Image (cartoon, rainbow over all chains, first blue to last red; front, side, top):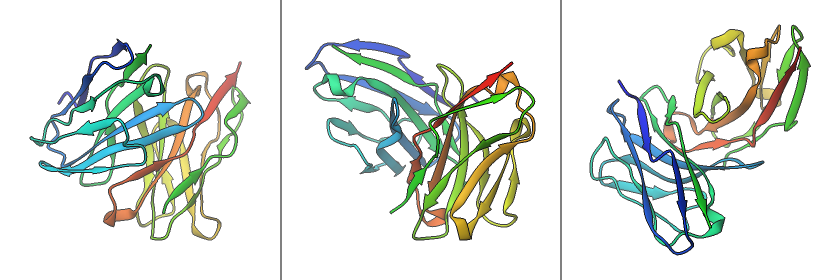
Amino acid sequence: NAGVTQTPKFQVLKTGQSMTLQCAQDMNHEYMSWYRQDPGMGLRLIHYSVGAGITDQGEVPNGYNVSRSTTEDFPLRLLSAAPSQTSVYFCASKSSTDTQYFGPGTRLTVL
Amino acid sequence: AQSVTQLGSHVSVSEGALVLLRCNYSSSVPPYLFWYVQYPNQGLQLLLKYTTGATLVKGINGFEAEFKKSETSFHLTKPSAHMSDAAEYFCAVSEGYTGNQFYFGTGTSLTVIP
Protein backbone atom coordinates (compact mmCIF):
# COMPACT_ATOMS: atom_id res chain seq x y z
CA ASN A 1 0.00 0.00 0.00
CA ALA A 2 1.21 3.50 -0.82
CA GLY A 3 -1.03 4.92 1.94
CA VAL A 4 -1.96 8.56 1.45
CA THR A 5 -0.21 10.36 -1.39
CA GLN A 6 -0.22 14.06 -2.17
CA THR A 7 0.93 16.03 -5.18
CA PRO A 8 2.66 18.36 -5.66
CA LYS A 9 5.10 18.55 -2.76
CA PHE A 10 5.85 22.21 -3.37
CA GLN A 11 3.95 24.92 -5.25
CA VAL A 12 4.34 28.64 -5.73
CA LEU A 13 1.35 30.63 -6.97
CA LYS A 14 0.65 34.24 -7.73
CA THR A 15 -2.29 35.96 -6.09
CA GLY A 16 -5.47 35.19 -8.01
CA GLN A 17 -4.27 31.98 -9.61
CA SER A 18 -6.16 28.76 -9.12
CA MET A 19 -4.88 25.27 -8.60
CA THR A 20 -5.80 21.84 -7.34
CA LEU A 21 -3.95 19.89 -4.68
CA GLN A 22 -4.25 16.20 -5.29
CA CYS A 23 -4.79 13.54 -2.63
CA ALA A 24 -5.25 9.83 -3.07
CA GLN A 25 -5.41 6.83 -0.75
CA ASP A 26 -5.37 3.15 -1.52
CA MET A 27 -6.67 1.84 1.81
CA ASN A 28 -10.36 1.99 0.90
CA HIS A 29 -11.06 4.46 3.69
CA GLU A 30 -14.40 6.20 3.59
CA TYR A 31 -13.37 9.27 5.56
CA MET A 32 -10.90 11.77 4.10
CA SER A 33 -9.98 15.26 5.13
CA TRP A 34 -7.84 18.28 4.35
CA TYR A 35 -5.95 20.31 6.94
CA ARG A 36 -3.74 23.32 6.81
CA GLN A 37 -0.84 23.74 9.20
CA ASP A 38 0.36 27.18 10.19
CA PRO A 39 3.03 28.06 12.78
CA GLY A 40 1.61 28.18 16.30
CA MET A 41 -1.86 27.12 15.16
CA GLY A 42 -1.59 23.38 14.85
CA LEU A 43 -3.70 21.70 12.19
CA ARG A 44 -7.02 23.18 11.19
CA LEU A 45 -9.64 21.26 9.31
CA ILE A 46 -10.61 22.73 5.93
CA HIS A 47 -13.04 20.19 4.46
CA TYR A 48 -13.83 16.56 4.97
CA SER A 49 -15.72 13.75 3.30
CA VAL A 50 -17.40 10.70 4.79
CA GLY A 51 -17.71 8.92 1.47
CA ALA A 52 -17.94 9.35 -2.27
CA GLY A 53 -20.33 12.14 -3.16
CA ILE A 54 -20.45 13.54 0.38
CA THR A 55 -18.41 16.49 1.59
CA ASP A 56 -18.71 18.99 4.41
CA GLN A 57 -16.98 22.06 5.73
CA GLY A 58 -14.49 22.10 8.55
CA GLU A 59 -13.17 24.94 10.62
CA VAL A 60 -11.61 27.06 7.84
CA PRO A 61 -13.37 26.31 4.52
CA ASN A 62 -13.40 29.76 2.90
CA GLY A 63 -11.48 29.97 -0.35
CA TYR A 64 -11.37 26.21 -0.85
CA ASN A 65 -13.56 23.72 -2.69
CA VAL A 66 -13.57 19.94 -2.61
CA SER A 67 -15.28 17.09 -4.37
CA ARG A 68 -15.29 13.33 -3.83
CA SER A 69 -16.19 11.45 -6.98
CA THR A 70 -14.38 8.27 -5.95
CA THR A 71 -13.40 6.65 -2.66
CA GLU A 72 -9.72 6.98 -3.54
CA ASP A 73 -9.43 10.66 -4.49
CA PHE A 74 -10.14 13.88 -2.62
CA PRO A 75 -8.77 16.94 -4.43
CA LEU A 76 -8.65 20.39 -2.85
CA ARG A 77 -9.19 23.39 -5.11
CA LEU A 78 -8.03 26.92 -4.48
CA LEU A 79 -10.26 29.11 -6.60
CA SER A 80 -8.34 32.39 -6.37
CA ALA A 81 -5.20 32.09 -4.31
CA ALA A 82 -4.42 34.68 -1.65
CA PRO A 83 -1.26 35.20 0.42
CA SER A 84 -3.23 34.13 3.51
CA GLN A 85 -3.42 30.66 1.97
CA THR A 86 0.34 30.24 2.20
CA SER A 87 0.60 27.14 4.36
CA VAL A 88 1.41 23.47 4.49
CA TYR A 89 -1.54 21.33 3.47
CA PHE A 90 -2.09 17.80 4.70
CA CYS A 91 -4.55 15.26 3.44
CA ALA A 92 -5.62 12.41 5.70
CA SER A 93 -7.82 9.35 5.59
CA LYS A 94 -9.34 7.54 8.52
CA SER A 95 -9.72 3.84 9.07
CA SER A 96 -12.61 2.09 10.74
CA THR A 97 -10.51 1.95 13.91
CA ASP A 98 -10.45 5.76 13.96
CA THR A 99 -6.79 6.16 13.18
CA GLN A 100 -6.04 8.98 10.76
CA TYR A 101 -3.25 8.45 8.26
CA PHE A 102 -1.60 11.57 6.90
CA GLY A 103 0.01 12.28 3.58
CA PRO A 104 3.46 13.90 3.35
CA GLY A 105 2.06 17.38 2.79
CA THR A 106 2.10 20.11 0.14
CA ARG A 107 3.98 23.29 0.89
CA LEU A 108 2.17 26.17 -0.84
CA THR A 109 3.44 29.72 -1.18
CA VAL A 110 1.20 32.45 -2.58
CA LEU A 111 3.01 35.60 -3.67
CA ALA B 1 -17.63 21.35 20.62
CA GLN B 2 -14.25 19.83 21.13
CA SER B 3 -11.01 21.59 21.86
CA VAL B 4 -7.46 20.68 22.80
CA THR B 5 -4.95 22.63 24.85
CA GLN B 6 -1.28 21.75 24.85
CA LEU B 7 0.61 23.46 27.64
CA GLY B 8 4.02 24.60 26.54
CA SER B 9 4.76 25.23 22.89
CA HIS B 10 8.42 24.37 23.49
CA VAL B 11 9.83 21.78 25.89
CA SER B 12 13.50 21.00 26.39
CA VAL B 13 14.82 17.94 28.20
CA SER B 14 18.22 16.40 28.61
CA GLU B 15 18.97 13.11 26.95
CA GLY B 16 17.93 10.36 29.34
CA ALA B 17 15.52 12.55 31.28
CA LEU B 18 11.77 12.11 31.60
CA VAL B 19 9.64 13.52 28.80
CA LEU B 20 6.26 14.96 29.82
CA LEU B 21 4.06 16.70 27.26
CA ARG B 22 0.76 17.98 28.53
CA CYS B 23 -2.61 17.80 26.83
CA ASN B 24 -6.01 18.81 28.15
CA TYR B 25 -9.22 18.52 26.20
CA SER B 26 -12.83 19.50 26.34
CA SER B 27 -15.49 17.25 24.93
CA SER B 28 -19.23 16.96 25.32
CA VAL B 29 -19.16 13.25 24.51
CA PRO B 30 -16.77 10.43 25.42
CA PRO B 31 -13.65 11.34 23.49
CA TYR B 32 -11.18 9.43 21.44
CA LEU B 33 -7.71 10.83 22.09
CA PHE B 34 -4.57 10.72 20.01
CA TRP B 35 -0.94 11.77 20.04
CA TYR B 36 0.87 12.34 16.76
CA VAL B 37 4.52 13.11 16.09
CA GLN B 38 5.83 15.19 13.21
CA TYR B 39 9.48 15.13 12.20
CA PRO B 40 10.81 18.05 10.14
CA ASN B 41 9.30 18.32 6.66
CA GLN B 42 7.24 15.19 7.14
CA GLY B 43 3.61 14.31 7.73
CA LEU B 44 2.08 13.27 11.03
CA GLN B 45 2.64 9.80 12.42
CA LEU B 46 0.41 8.21 15.05
CA LEU B 47 2.18 7.60 18.37
CA LEU B 48 -0.73 6.20 20.33
CA LYS B 49 -4.47 6.47 20.83
CA TYR B 50 -7.12 5.97 23.46
CA THR B 51 -10.58 4.87 22.43
CA THR B 52 -12.04 2.68 25.15
CA GLY B 53 -10.80 0.28 27.79
CA ALA B 54 -7.51 0.61 29.64
CA THR B 55 -6.74 4.23 30.40
CA LEU B 56 -2.98 3.78 30.19
CA VAL B 57 -2.02 3.28 26.58
CA LYS B 58 1.36 2.43 25.18
CA GLY B 59 2.58 3.60 21.82
CA ILE B 60 5.57 3.40 19.59
CA ASN B 61 9.11 4.46 20.50
CA GLY B 62 8.55 3.94 24.24
CA PHE B 63 5.86 6.59 24.65
CA GLU B 64 2.75 6.17 26.73
CA ALA B 65 -0.19 8.30 27.80
CA GLU B 66 -2.87 8.08 30.44
CA PHE B 67 -6.46 9.15 29.98
CA LYS B 68 -7.72 10.85 33.14
CA LYS B 69 -11.36 11.67 32.76
CA SER B 70 -11.59 13.60 36.04
CA GLU B 71 -8.77 15.88 34.91
CA THR B 72 -9.75 15.89 31.21
CA SER B 73 -6.12 15.17 30.46
CA PHE B 74 -4.12 12.90 28.20
CA HIS B 75 -0.49 13.65 28.96
CA LEU B 76 2.28 11.99 26.98
CA THR B 77 5.32 10.57 28.76
CA LYS B 78 8.52 8.72 28.04
CA PRO B 79 10.86 7.64 30.85
CA SER B 80 14.10 8.40 29.07
CA ALA B 81 14.49 10.88 26.22
CA HIS B 82 16.54 10.03 23.17
CA MET B 83 18.00 12.43 20.66
CA SER B 84 15.75 10.94 18.00
CA ASP B 85 12.66 12.07 19.99
CA ALA B 86 13.24 15.68 18.96
CA ALA B 87 10.14 16.58 16.95
CA GLU B 88 6.78 18.35 17.07
CA TYR B 89 4.06 16.56 19.01
CA PHE B 90 0.34 17.06 18.53
CA CYS B 91 -2.53 15.99 20.74
CA ALA B 92 -5.90 15.47 19.06
CA VAL B 93 -9.45 14.61 20.07
CA SER B 94 -12.39 13.25 18.13
CA GLU B 95 -15.97 12.74 19.13
CA GLY B 96 -15.60 9.05 19.65
CA TYR B 97 -17.29 6.59 17.36
CA THR B 98 -20.06 9.07 16.59
CA GLY B 99 -17.78 11.74 15.15
CA ASN B 100 -15.52 12.19 12.20
CA GLN B 101 -13.86 15.50 12.90
CA PHE B 102 -10.51 15.67 14.62
CA TYR B 103 -9.45 18.68 16.64
CA PHE B 104 -5.74 19.28 17.11
CA GLY B 105 -3.78 21.16 19.69
CA THR B 106 -1.28 23.77 18.61
CA GLY B 107 1.63 21.42 19.11
CA THR B 108 4.65 21.12 21.39
CA SER B 109 8.16 21.23 20.00
CA LEU B 110 10.44 18.89 21.91
CA THR B 111 14.17 19.57 22.04
CA VAL B 112 16.53 16.96 23.46
CA ILE B 113 19.79 18.30 24.84
CA PRO B 114 22.79 15.99 24.62
